[in-house]
Every structure is written in structure tokens, then in C-alpha cells.
Length: 255
Image 1 (cartoon, rainbow, N blue to C red):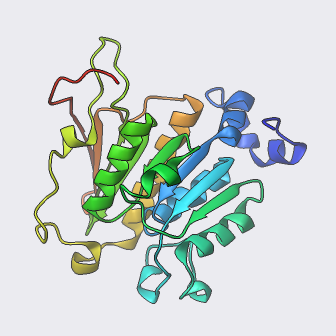
Image 2: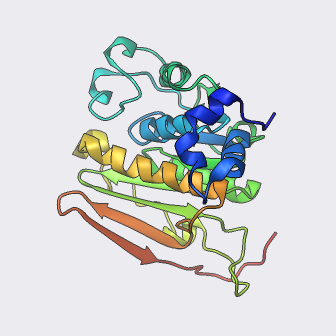
């Protein structure tokens, strides 16, 4: 049921006070079903803040296990969960944070082969993965399913995020851009080093992951203006945010 209990009203009171959210917005959060790809550096704050916000159902797709080197940034896990599946560790942390949230675990990678099954029944996809194969798979799957995608990435001291809704048109009737309009092709293997190779400052994943959670909340409640057609970039060393607009590169008709 969408009705908020007295305990939920007390828990989400600061949300309900906001005219942009209110009781109706909180009920939308309760009804929402959001799949998060990755329970790592980005996935940790995404899952924590969406669970705290009252997203009714959270899916977690991750086949990895918690290691000691994860704990510098993957704050949903702790020393006692080393060796556990990240999806299980994250689900246990969410249960402690908010028992009103239902968690669905997928102990496997998000791939073109698993995408349809994993996405079934979800309203929103959030990609917190750390590799281009998964990012493109997430973008293609969300576009095919006609659900919004929040996509983010981090490396060293820099991060970025955007929102994709390529199946919809703007006020002028032009289709919104897709992921491939922003990044037409995957970079050659080895050109862009992974975080495991180049390193990443731990708090950066918190900044970008929290911003991704905020975009998801906006999409669910209808508050504000999501980052559709805009790439938000953050340089943590200079504490600078920049926004770049991008548009569709090719003419396509809505499906």
C-alpha cells in the first residue's frame, strides 16, 4: 500500500515539510522501484541515501565480494563484512537503516544478457559501475525499457554524472540525447585506467554518488530539473563544478 504509516510520517517528516515533496512525493518514493548497478564506491552512497529517503524497493546488481581495499570509499560495507557478497552486505546495511525498504539482490553482473530479467518491474536504473561495458549495457537497456537512467563515473580526483531519457522529447519536440550521443564509442582497452590502476580519492565517490541519489529523488518526486542533456563535472582538487550541455547527434524517431 502507498499509505504512509505514523512511523513513516515521523521518519520522513523533513521531506514532507518540503512543498516540492510533501506527502504525495513521499508516497511516490514509497511506490518507486529503483535498480542500482554496483554496490561499490558510487553504489554505497546511492543505496544509503535512497534507502533513507524511503524508496520502497531497491534492487542491487553486483557479483563482487567486499575486500579490504574497498573500505576506503565503499562506506556501506565495513571491516566485519570483508569476504561477503557486496549485495548481501549492502542489503543488511539497508535493513538496519530503514526496515520499510524491500531489497532485491542480483548476485551477478549487469550485462546485455541479464539486463531484461534484472530490469523487469523497475521504474528507474542507476549505473554506479566502474567499467565501460556495463555503462553501455545499462544505457541500452534503460533506453529499450523506456525508463530513466542516472549515470555517473569517477576517477582519481574527478567525477561526472548525467540523466538519460532518450525515449522522450523536449518542449520543442526534439528527442533527448542518448548515452551514445555523449560518448559515441567505448575508448580502446587500456586507454582509460580503472580506479584499481590509477586510484581514486574516497570522498569523491560520496560526492558523486550523493548527487546521483539526488537526481533519482528528483525523477521520482518530480521536483526540480533533472540533469537531462547536461553533464555535471566535478574537480575535487579545485572544488569546481562545471555543466556541459549536449544534444542528440542523429535524428531518430521515438519508438
